[in-house]
Image (cartoon, rainbow, N blue to C red; front, side, top):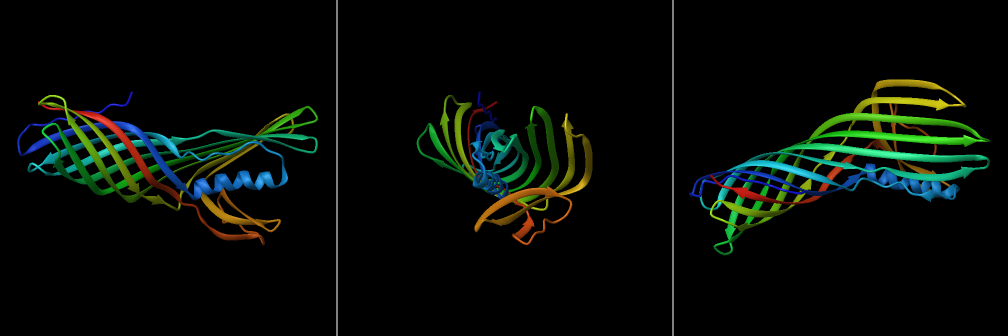
Length: 275
């Protein structure tokens, strides 16, 4: 259930606490491009079943304390949480080897925001809330890539995980519709847009293998997220990799640290309760 609440004092000066929840969209940036590129790269040589998918959609929750110092203008301080995660699977064969790859990218973000609000009365029961401001976006990136293989009845697997926390400054703006239910309660629906991008993710990684064919395990704390364009059979594929060193190859170009784009939008609904 998506819900929200706020507190109002019903004068020209008022304090409101807004809690809201809804659906979030983020473009993903290099992360999304690399996921799509990996599907295209594997599909160039193998007949794939399934495809890797980027976590474009997620859940969004927000809380904001707003002080209105007049009938129209207010200043709000907020905190929120949105999470995007996606598990996708591809299957293919290499001669006598059957391969199943599972990809689980996830990012969780805590935005701390400061906003300016402007209220526009449409009628005694309806008003618009125009909002704009800046924020600090703290993101946790998790990457889990597993490969299961079967060779003449023998099983083996590889799994690589990466985790990093990084923050950035971003901007957000919103348009809200408020409907008065009683003198102390209102229903709120808001559409948000955000602009934020994070680069230079550095974090912990683990690389391990198991099964009947092999066994090893390694880990470290100085891994980075990289992106590059791979030229293969006269075609170019964008890829994302996680490694301590910058990827290098004669057919690599545009090598750089990968960006996670949080730019996108969210829609939330809620209520306002007054004392």
